[in-house]
Image (cartoon, rainbow, N blue to C red; front, top):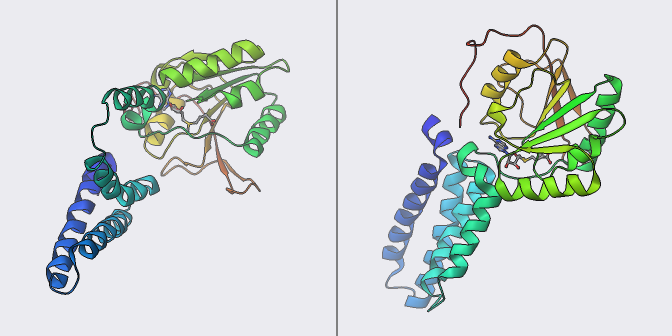
Length: 266
Ligand SMILES: C[S@@+](CC[C@H](N)C(=O)[O-])C[C@H]1O[C@@H](n2cnc3c(N)ncnc32)[C@H](O)[C@@H]1O
């Protein structure tokens, strides 16, 4: 199961192969009963539904279930697309890479903090009289721009090229916050009062190890939705937004020794 977590594409392939086996068995059983057209549509539907179900049973994240469901239809559409030019697909791929560069490498897709959560972070900053805030993986920079000003300094760190460019331009135009084009694993956290991370389950153990090595005593690591496995948070805030967002607050005690933690996943 660990291999599936690290390489979910293996699970996706297993799901399609399992579904194809069911489809072949069903088609053989129904060959004399249904005509060719009906068999084709039945095969396509069974392939999609069974692949999605197996993906779910394998415990892959929900977007892989959608991929399992839509993949057979996508293959069928591609095979029937006729003589389309190739370049739009190349351009599409480059754009997707520039926006979602971290999804494959870090297993962290782009989704954004909502307004109630941003408000909760603003009040957390005020409650703790925090002056320095870093959003690790700042996406379009909305959190950074909302928290900048009022005497404090907020910065974001983002490595997906197009996402960084857009957020850096927005921050410059609005003169709120600073967005660095940087990998979160090389960002220095030693002077931050609050470090915020809305990433995925994958990097949390290594991120916590980095935070305990670098962050000063009394500072806070705030994790949106994805807790650090095996570490009890000092506080958990459950917000009353539609998503029932949970913020896990980890207060740093003393700094851990430099070699005392897990290595980054990327
Ligand atoms: C889920 S989004 C969160 C965006 C933003 N923090 C927010 O809450 O609205 C995670 C972001 O982290 C970025 N990211 C993932 N791994 C990264 C890394 N190693 N270095 C820098 N950014 C990274 C992704 O590109 C993505 O924009």
